[in-house]
Image (cartoon, rainbow, N blue to C red; front, side, top):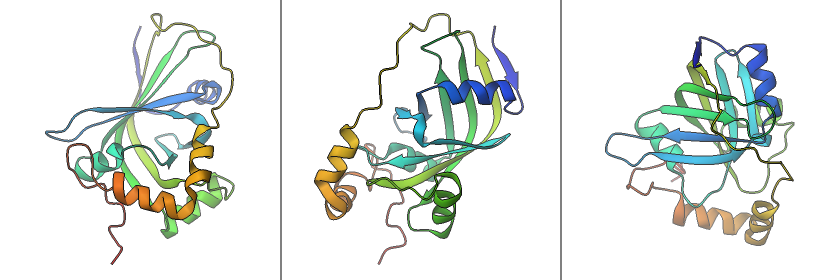
Length: 186
């Protein structure tokens, strides 16, 4: 049932385009494995072997710490509506810092220049393996809507409050690994 592919096919791209969420999985030597759900509204396929997502503020910044320490990253999509399928992208990732020229370029080119309040970085994945599996055991769910909770939280915090939150909660992982946020700051 599982199949390996060297690149994303058109069928894979169409499948990704129908999904409403994806999961990231990362780890570094001696750290906990982190798995995080994300909305696909921030996900972009950048080529046959590349993808990125606009990363918004979270309670931690584990993926960034793991990218800095190790770089291994897996992104998983699974159908919860329609025909069953699980699709994983295996590769190496890195973080593109908010405020960098590359971030500004990607934001303009791939996200129509729209930066939601609380966007903290872009996570880039170069993958060398696309793996599909059946997904027969994944239950069916019906998509209702995106949550507006993150936007409300970010608006209530405001830009200064979000930056203070980053300094308090997003500079190191739960295992004490640096995330690289503000690495170029004095």
